Image (cartoon, one colour):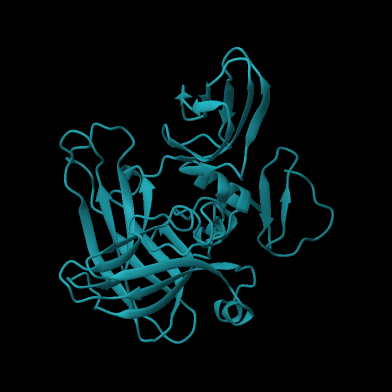
Length: 349
């Protein structure tokens, strides 16, 4: 082991010539990997949170508001509204008072939901996050933690987990873990819930590969029996984390660029007009577009906006998880062509 000439302080870490990390425990240098679990969970800070965009900093679809059921809001978070409920979701800034209550000055964006609950049968308002590969969490105990505040405490927030076994063929029906609830106060506070997911042994998966997932569902009002009353008000959420284990750890905050890449695996868009061409041609035009990150599956491509002249259609060919080709259909060969476009690519679960 490398020789350290000066007496270190307890907890001091250094990198040895072979690249391993060691820490002084007061009497000797020990590998970080051999430290107690309570210490190692803090040091190994990457990958604990199974959710993407729990800080709501990734906003490829804008800041809202979103009001329709099934709409994606902040990346990876979708809202579902049924019956006579109404729900408007938007991204808002975190102010100094919020940050003081949270106890973290790095908080910049939070998700705000304005809900009007209804007693009409089948009415509900919910927020979902789907985690691909149901086997990733099957048979495991997990803990959900999040910060929340509401407009008219004591409003209630309920949450549950579900195991969806995919699409195609005859997959097993979705299995739901019983919902739990918390009652909010007048200030931002961190709440937690522990769930144990059942084993997926014996379940039948859909024939469409890669369509199974674990879903996290927040309920804000429900006319049925999901452990939450019919209620109306505003809800603000920040710092949502789901991790394996029964004890909530410090909120993981990965680099925003890494979080963006995780989100772009499911959805990505060009920023405004990505490209164009102007000139005369007697043959077809052709572009190859590469996505900023490899996507989860072959996505659905949508062009927005489509502008220019002397072309009539934009066929997409050879779409794969890495990118796609386009070849606008020329209206008048030999004449000037002007083609400007942006695109969105969706492979969301």
